[in-house]
Length: 218
Length: 109
Image (cartoon, rainbow over all chains, first blue to last red; front, side, top):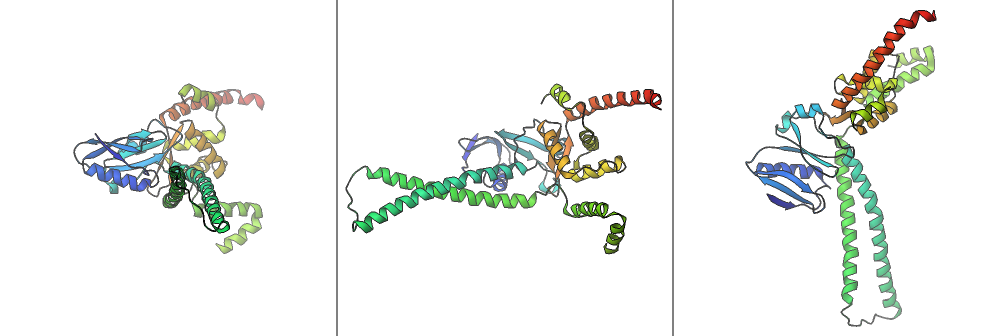
């Protein structure tokens, strides 16, 4: 059993999926994930081609849809609401896949949490800087007293900076992934069909006369 | 959700729910469901996207149906084993309705 630490695996699931496939090709088959330590565990074996798909589903379904099973999909692992499915067929032969809407929703939720966090720490940082500047301006330079307790200030400063960097990185990364996923996940209603539908309703509303007129246009 | 709970919640079914499930004899898109229902009811029942989507989401939560993505990454709905059991129970009930409707139909003329 090999253990690999991958801290931000969920920010870019597509990259993680490719990574899992690459690992399988090296003979390391994904076994399970510890969500809290962010460690992936791999079973060492023969190298094999494996396609992975990560999904996030609050409605836990115990089995995969039959169509997916027929196409060779099987559950590789679950961790919380995260579901890992794998398929041994070559990528080109796979037409269906587990749905990813849940990830987009989950990601959006996380960014909503990160925004206030970044804002909060920015305010702290600003406050800190302004008070330093004002003391420097007013007193004509600050008088620094040597003290081992300065480490607390530096640590706090580092923590605040770290949190801001982490927050901004997370938001940027997640937004990017969501954009990509959104582009690949189609909406419920096909656009051209919506037009037909509304046209039909329009016809109904306009009555017979309107129908004739509309037919002229189409 | 176990099957007993599901039966309690879904039987008797609304006409919309029944037709949605009835059209899932094969996996379909949301819009495919609407079209199919319109077809088999000869245009009597045209479901709105909100109704269909709401019902499908509820059914998915209860394990009556599952979803997956097709080649174009569109959501496709499929009935589960439990969902099939549910439909069998509902169809038995509707058959009884129909039998009785035919038996007593004449009395109302």
